Length: 620
Ligand SMILES: [Zn+2]
Image (tube, rainbow, N blue to C red; front, side, top):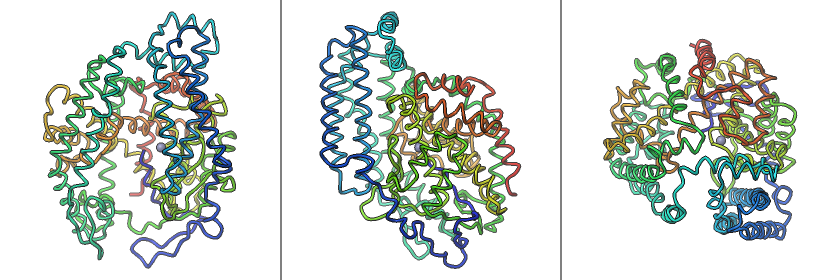
């Protein structure tokens, strides 16, 4: 999920560039001296010494696929047969993940080298084809047989969650013929709406706006334009962008509608009211649980409103305007110095900030972030991939490290993904158990950003810095309502498409406006925001996924609240939960380890109290 916009002020012990709008910034080298060379990935050390050892793993994965395939038609013949297949699938996943990570990282550091990634993709497709019978045959398992198998082969209990998951899906599974028909039609049914959405943008000539001596594109450069010091530029960019979005919303809306209808139709065959219900079921969440969260979030809208007013007042003062408009919202706080950290400083800061998570976490994090181990690749250059990511427990890639606090936040976030995997590997012997709902894995990564801010708040000696981090903390907390609004739009849209109430792009406008108005008065003031739904590609590219962001954001805040009340106790239970892997539904993990009950109507009480306190502390 988006990594916190973490713009703060000077940190003691790190270089500070001149404040925005003053003289030319002090030149800052984020990777000075030998650092540029040291922050390169060592593929030989961390992946494969040579092509022969890479090839050996490819062959091993192929052999495992063959061994699994040999059980086709005999999967449930005995407990031993089932256990044997599960063991091999588990081992295959470890192998495949390493091959995938190798492909991803080698192509990220040099986009011209797609060889290993493409080889992986071919291998994966072959593997899936050979082993797809597993899911189909496993459907023959019922509760009674499972119990008998568990008695015959007690080690099967280690796979209990996988097996229960199958039983759980049984009532929603179609006949083998229907399933294979749907699977074969899948790419044609699912592939075109996101492609058409993209095409809609690609073929549009968006207006250009002259800004600060350059000509910028309102679509591609929107974020830059909204930070332009010239207010009229910002307004023109906003108005022109939303006007264009309105013009192309008919086609994007058509793609969204047809995609939703197709998914709803398939979900109906499986016995779900809408595809959204199915997506929740798949994530071990239910509509009542989600409604419970939305209910609590919406009950606290006055808190959000208070924050918006505080922010508007500050913008008005900073910008010297009578009323802060929507195109002023992205303007950085006036005169806030931008702290910068070298690569070495960032790693040390990350390690210090996450040290409350205990000795094992710290040891693994040190291993990841010590550049001597060659698991980091953050120095920019030609032909590099975009963004920042960790894959499995292996390594960390960032396209071009610049040393901003936001980059440090990204580092601790992504490290959170890697160390989660590592802890599961340490405790369960395989990465197989680290796959769970995105809202859980993202909550682990996002919580690290809270620990980073918390660490800075506790250790920074500079009052201006503290103020700035406080401000950022507050902004991050209050994102909850924005994320909830975007997620709720999608839920409402599926309901209305299902009920035949949305039949074109105007229907999406209406849903967007209604949900928007209930969350944010800006939707009353700016008619343009009706087409705001055009700005989240997720609705097309990862349908029914956005709620993960709400739950992850909410959970990370909840962890932070619990952590503040009992740092040592919470950290212990929390890392134990992470290390356990997904051996039971996420809701059960949360309940068993952290006493977090997603059905509790008062779940967020303490969290909102923490947020209210943060708002009260915010610099006026
Ligand atoms: Zn993430």
